[in-house]
Length: 487
Image 1: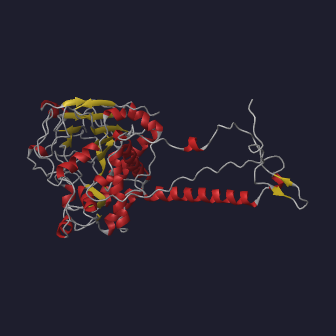
Image 2: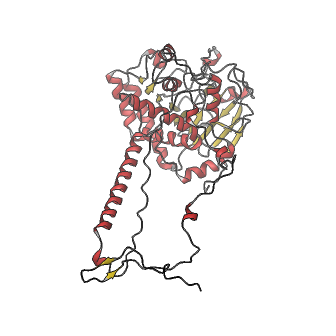
Image 3: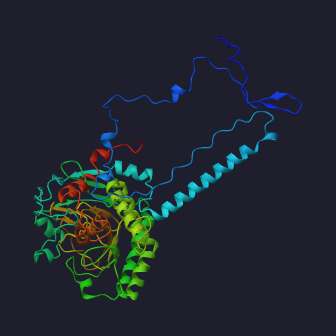
């Protein structure tokens, strides 16, 4: 039992007086121990000199380390929870206007925050939320080690079981180097022919995710699979086939769109790009008739679902790389209001519809894409994935089963890839999403061409190899995949 002095037991100064002279207080005084103080509890002890946050070594690289300052979108902070108002007996009848005003302010603040979040979801490329069930699937993913070191110098040949070509990346590090194609590269292989060339067959059901790791443990490619809702996803696959058949019959193709270095099949691209002769970043241009055909594809719910799953899976398996794409897209759209992305809440700049009906690609790289970036490839159609439609990764000598409706991510700018043929009565199409390396160069040059940037005296803050290594550092590691979703 402790005692209090008269001074310590004095009534609070916030008392009220009636017209008759009587005084009262709405608060009940609760005596506390004399040695209790709030100030020490609210203070933070100083860290000793040289100390470091335990999580500092695990933090992502600061975007300011890049050659051009990255302008990040300011996100409103959520409102603080309203401070609890103590109502004692008899206060309901005499509730003050001050409390009503406080509650009104809190409601207004909450409404503004909700509006900010709604606007952000519509404007930011990275607003998509990753569900817990997706994190659990990532945690349960299998791994395949390719025994290659993709963090090696970009000017040296990569070493692996298949052997990379020498110097697959340009000096600047923004795009891959275009490789010449031989006559053998342009022939369509069967599964048996590929295995006779020494390819190792990888069986995959198209559902359970599998991760391809280099020898340092970084995930450079992912067999992402498909959503667990098999019934509705099968309907998406069927509907997209019909859409592609309709588009193939309606679109007025140029000869170069039906026969090209990627294969002998009709192909249509849409979205924001830069490279291949473009003077500035812009949307790919089509005739009015052809644009109407493309718009019908982009507006279709089945296509939107394919695109949305590709973006969500990208964010799940490579969150740092996804953020790099999102930052670039957000800056492009903020700087040029005339640009129109294919899809909302999607970080990819462009998409290609390979309209079939029997898509079998030649050996190639998509050299204009960002070298460390990922291309999202979704197989569409009706075919037996055990017999045909495999993904061939030539540098790794891998023959991967690629079932209809499934998604695979690869760094298509540096990995030579193709597909095996499907049967004569089968149908195969594909839908791809990607971003041109020129988009990233445009942003780093201050939203201008490299020629204008250098003419004005601009100098990049990093070398091409450093840019490449920074891209590799944005790939996830196997250790990160093994972290429990609960954490």
